Length: 303
Image (cartoon, rainbow, N blue to C red; front, side):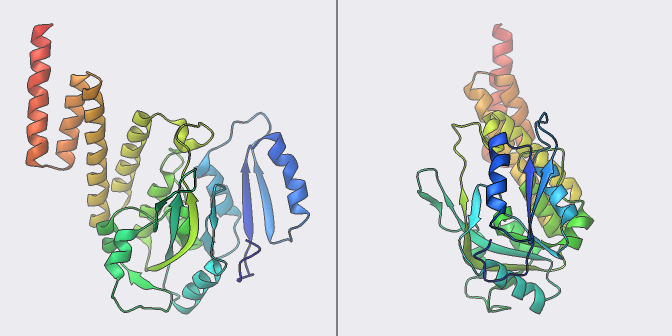
C-alpha cells in the first residue's frame, strides 16, 4: 500500500484471531507505518475467529472513506497506480458506485492460470469507445451475460452502496465474495470497468487446509455454492443476475448428480439430476435424468 502513488487512503487490517506469532509480528511491522494504517483485532486468544464475512463487515463499519477497496492477505496489487486510477474515476464520474479492474491468477508454482480475470467482459468492451481514459461503463446485464464475478482484490464500491446492501452475508464463509459482488452490482447506480491488470490472485493450494476454500470437501463446496446462488437469486431484482444464479445452481447440481452416480449412489444422483433439470432444461440432460430414473427403479427391484 505504501508504494501506491495515491496517498490519501486509510488501511484497515482486520486480524480475525490469528496466531500468537502473527500478533507478535505486528509490533515490528507497525513501527514503519503511519497513522493511515489501523489494526483491528477481533475476538480473543480463545476464539476460533468470526470468519471472512463478519471480519470484513467489521472493517466496513470502521471505515471513514466514502469508497471501499479490498485486498485479501494472500493477494496483492501489482500496479502502483491502482488507487490513483480508481480515485480519478470516482471523482470525475461521480455517479459511479462500482469500479472493477483486472488481475491475473497464479498457481502455487508460479504458473499463470488466468492472464486476465474477466476475459469475456474484456472481449465485450473491446472496440467500444471508452467512457473515460481508464475504461468503460458497463451494465448489470453485460456483467451477467459475461459470467464470472469480480473478485474483491479488483473491486471498489461506494460505502453507501455497501451499507444499503447490508455488507457481506454472514451465513456463509465460502463464496461470500460472489454473493457480495452480485448484490452490490444489482444496487449499483453505475458500473465502471478498467481492463488494466492491477493485481495478482494467488490460487489456494487445494491439498492444504490452511485456508477456508480448501478446508471444505468438494461436495461441501458445491453445496455451499448452491446456497450462495439461491441467496443471490432471492436478493437481487435484476433478471439477468437472477437467471445467471439459477443457471449456476443448475451447473452445481449437475456436478453433484454425476458425483453421486460415480460413487454408486443412484438415488441421490437422480434427485440432483432432477434439480439440475428444473434449473436449466436441455434435451441431453432430460435423457440423462430419465436414464437415471430407470436405473434407480431397476436397482430397487433387484434388491
